[in-house]
Amino acid sequence: MKQEPLTDIQRIYPAKTLVELVYSASQQALFVSSPDWEDEGQSRVLRINPQTLAVEEEISLQVKGFGVALDDHRGHLYLSQGFNGTVAVVDIAANRPIATIALMQEIAFKQLYQREGIVGERQAFLLRELERFGVSEGFPWKLRELVFDPRSERLFLPGLGLGIDSVLFVVDTRKRQLEKIIHGFGYNVVGITLDEAGRRVFVSNMQGQLFVVDPDSLAVVSNGRSKSISCLIWSMTHSKTGSSVSIRALTAVIGVTIIWNVNMLPVARAIRSSL
Image (cartoon, rainbow, N blue to C red; front, side):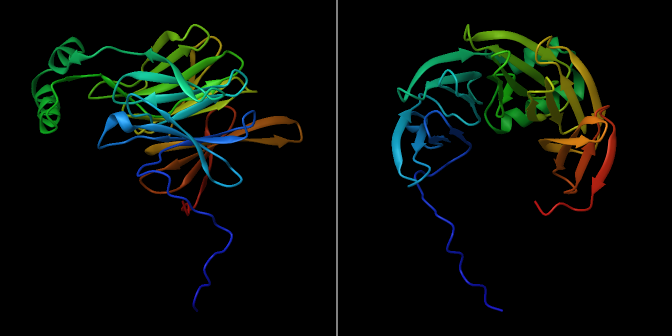
């Protein structure tokens, strides 16, 4: 049977690359990160009218921005600058960048591995892999996803370690500075989401671990295991006796959904996700 073309989908092509987007209720606008891989200085944040899909503003960035998080009360958009170890701050009312927050310094990877106790064949393998891309110095962690907690006014960013354990960066957005680096997040931390009401930040890695961080005390309060978690979606479900929370994690390898209960124990697993 011939499928009729969909008529209720609107499309625009405002840039070569679009990565992440967020909607601002206060500005009634979409803000989309648009890194330029050919000319980093042409990277932008696009302000798009959600009704007409017209690009209203192009906000210039000095370097590529990827992940986005929004403080709609203050009117600040945060972008992870994954290859530069920084976070950009954009004023969404004035449509201009207003600050850059540094999270780490560049290092020599050989010295880093020695300091971390990575020696012998493991170190040689890591250095060979970096050499393939012409890298001997750089930032020890890469940034992509981030979440903003309105109550604590903190920004949380997983840092994916290049051969070392991953970390969680905590940024004080009032002071616009790094507040803390929380260590111990294992191999390739990738997913993060916030349960604002329940006061929990969920972080996943590709080692099959799911961590829970208290956004107020910054303590790691729990972790569980599954298979190669690559991203997270959190949802609230209510029981007759009270409120319970299920965490759904889409796995990259086998494409299933795993559900955790409030005690962070896997309680259900859906058969083959369609996503």
